[in-house]
Length: 247
Image (cartoon, rainbow, N blue to C red; front, side, top):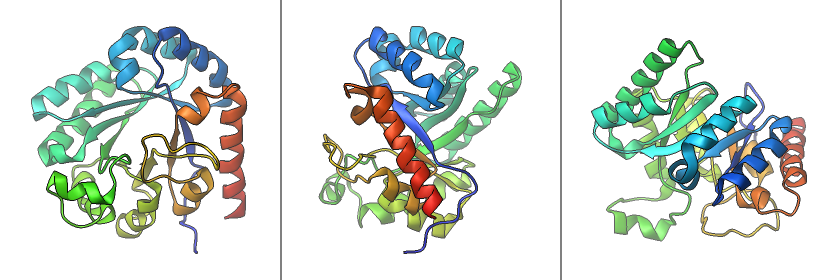
């Protein structure tokens, strides 16, 4: 199988999906030297978001705010303004929010970054959650398979100037063939060989994701619940590097 052309090495995102500020900051302090990006999702954002974001900023860490914003354009714009701050490199909206909402999110991220004099965060659109299996789609009123829906929603996101989409690694190859290598793919559901699938359905190993062309790989529980999170993160980084070397 031919590997997808890429311009840079894929980046590891460690999901700080833990239930306390102490656990989250311990992980940040332990893993920041590995030059990973940290994902702040619902659990941390709503539980201890301000304190964690201040800690991440002080640590000089790269941050992905996985807010999955989905509301009317004005409300999403207000949320983006509140979320953009130094260190935030990525944030998410739902593609199902539509063109106007996504355009407003991108424009607001650009404006707020300009006001603060910081790098503009990349806005990614969530397509079909990796916890959703093919057989679940009809319940949601969606026809066709996950890949078809991902491409359709990705087209909306591209036209709305999003930097890329969140999708399963199995959908990246088609995504890149349609929209080109520069339209980024951020892939959750990444599980090293032997790791439990948990509530994920459309999963891939780090190597499989790299070969498919993923630009960002999100790994949570296999790292944060490991007895040695630093060693677990380093093992994923080594697998990413080895896959890149083989391309």
